[in-house]
Image 1: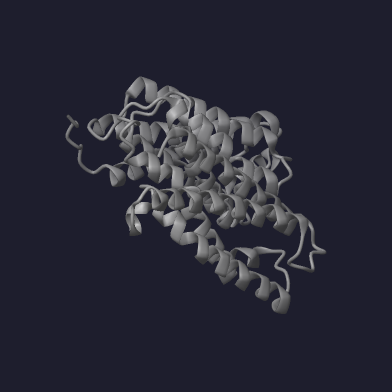
Image 2: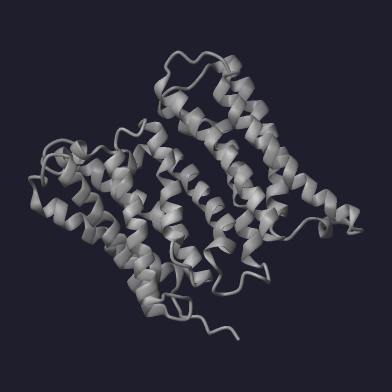
Length: 333
């Protein structure tokens, strides 16, 4: 597909994703929800309608061009096409669930079978531009930021969906004061929960980046774009009360882009790839602690916690890098 077509797909997916963010905010902050028919559901499902209509139109164009069967579906669009009726079915189940069993307003939101079905099929739809770009002949090994932008948007919104359904372990939702408090006390669950949330969020953020770095020589700004989109979901859920922490993650995206420019990681440069994985994770969570300390009342009281947590993040990043690229790939001709 052309850049224009993939960009329209990505932007309609943005509508879809923002609708979910608004709905997530409503479920988190409005305890009086009593019906399926809400303005936020209207934004969410209208986003589904427009992006689905666009994907169906691309398949219909293939039919009109004389292609038959699966050959009529543009490369990369098949999974999204198949996810459309599945999403609609789960949407109907969700409406019935809310009608007869009520509206979830707490952690039960994240375990509802209908919600899990919606999120899996939504992932397939919003990542359509990524699959399209993956084998597109005009992308190449060193794409420009503009050419890769639809894929970045799609994958970043997929990351936000994962972070939403793991929100009980999302460090991006912490306020600076809470970070400082958690790492200042050894008694109680605060330090344990923050440490676990940092590890989980580290994997959720870094894994998509490592996938892209293995596939392409990423242009400068790619990780910044992804992290800027990734903070929108936790921002919506917290009403952006933790803005310094969220901006710290965007800054971590800039640092990761600088590391890519310096190290030039790729599938053929395993050592550089591993180094990037470890250093990117370390820098992200060192910034997390630094921003929290600067805006949350000073350094945490337990030095082992605030010095060791970024090191653990770096080691987890290194392990992820080794799993994503256990052996260097041969250079492509």
